[in-house]
Image (cartoon, rainbow, N blue to C red):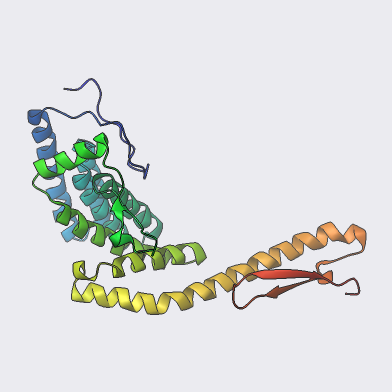
Length: 260
């Protein structure tokens, strides 16, 4: 057994350059078998509709799974996201789906966009020793990069849905970006998923603009209240300042009117 259990952070979102320590083949097989057994139980619990208990089951599976088996970790994180969606726990679903996507990025590094902005035509970030260890583990457990792409699609769909339900300017923007990423790989989507993505791409921009305007107005209201308190000793108020929205850029410019 290695001197210490690998401690790659699941939330890091970065591609570590130091290879993780790995277990011996026998130890890896035993731990993976334990993880799969817990996952099988959790799957049955999920199917029964007990989603909270299913989350606990998937977390037990995670506790047994070697941390360098990123695909298996991503499957469990994505399953946990599905549980949170069933429970309408949208923020937790976003977090779990993001953790799944980060795990997949560590075994299949993101592509760097070309000058024309097309990510799919770019080149893969440099494959370092840590990534090679994870790719080797992926192959050793009988999975392929194509499996990674399919799982990434599933996790993206779940995160996009959860972000959409969270609402708000920031979350809706993230949801739109997820659906845009999905639209770049239409061959990976099923017919129903493709319809979901296309519908979201039509509807989200409107909701995004509405959320942006609403939050901007709320922020301006709070700033106005604060500003009036600060300006009152000087015989001024926020009425002396006019904010004009630029319809093209969506930004605001400020003017001063001494007579207001």
